[in-house]
Image (cartoon, rainbow over all chains, first blue to last red; front, side):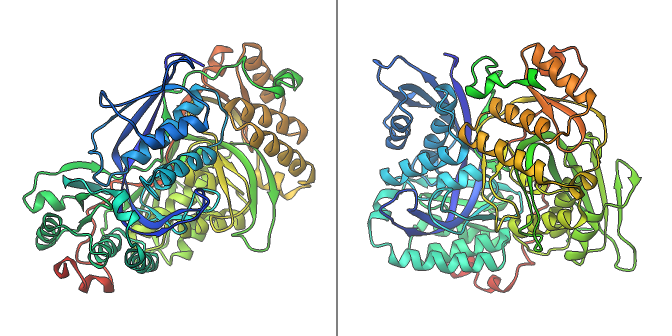
Length: 300
Length: 300
């Protein structure tokens, strides 16, 4: 247990479409849907502080309160300094709050030697997001990486996942924020109908092109398109590209060179094959293991 | 569908312990257990050839017959040239046959535009390995990456996975081959008892140190240690490190600098956060999609 902190990287995640599935139990609540995880993501460093000090979280140097992060640290009985950096905008549909929660869970588990499994940590972070109303499916997708399809709502104990076996360059452009909380607290019946239809379309043909088609169909049927997003998607389509809207943000994402071909100046990244993971793990403490250590290699 | 071929990378996988669970249905058959996926792995390039040409597979330039690869290509109705390269030794417990099967599935799906999902491709490769008698759990672990714990046997439709949330440098050293087929075709009752005990130990404390302890315990109880492997593990232990035996090969693997600290000259790699994935995906064919394309962005 070093005082130097532990660092995790969590990929960004743009959701193309989703359906909302509330449940009393936050490990069962969540969304079904699909999206792309991104090589642009969030790096989270967790450092132990003395228990009489309060937990502090910074994002790119600015202090802020991130409710899911505080919930995760509470669940792990951890008082910590959480320092995060990201190239992604907040509140624009990239799963930054989910990434903060999941990165904190992974890094704090190591920094505080809590010895939880990956599924347990993903469950903690997913539940924290659901309880805070900040997201429904990003954490689960970010724990997997790639181009995940969430076949069931909920955390890893309840959720079946599949994926589109593909990787691609991604371009994105953000015009502004949308509040996940305000959309999800409204009438989600229409949105959920549209999301389930898109999921059915995608599972019949799990390819990137159909993901983008099913995502545009969802954005239109759920009535979530803003004028600027609609225009950018149409511009990309007019030059033969594939784009859709990130749920939930005033953000357009495109496959490959879709936005630049249409004359925009987007940010560029790539799908991210790996899920959230620790970086720079220190040498495992060879003298600190539990009861099994008495029955060591010396017995061989 | 380019004639230039499609390339996938699949991480190597050392199994620390396992239990064997045969089943008539190869998608349900397999092993439970745990191990580490490795940044040393297998790169597989699949190129379409004309159907009147036979399928050919090469590994590091030498032609060879890999039964699971042929089964995967048959399942995908694909006649192909499969060119693989690896820094890992064959038959020494690194999951090379599983990697060849899984890499072929991922790359051929793309090269032949078969439009299967990731789970479907992993199921194909897992079933091909099980039917060929060359492996029971590598494919599933290699599709996930990281440090996977296989809680159930079988492919993705039947298998729950968890993982140790850690990354580490890995060292390994191979003395020779062991035949997976001959061990698995013998009496596996004792081995499976030992494997289930080790799984129970690890799920109670999902850390790298306990993985290595549970693996050594399995190797001893299943009576699989050779003299050279036993000696190397004891040497690592004597210098305060953690090592065990790769199942199934005459191979020792160690966390961090375990083998070099003990005076050996091992190969060095790292755990691999990502599962098997395509590389260098070409621009998605924007004119080749299925029925949904008529309802395109123009409708927005």
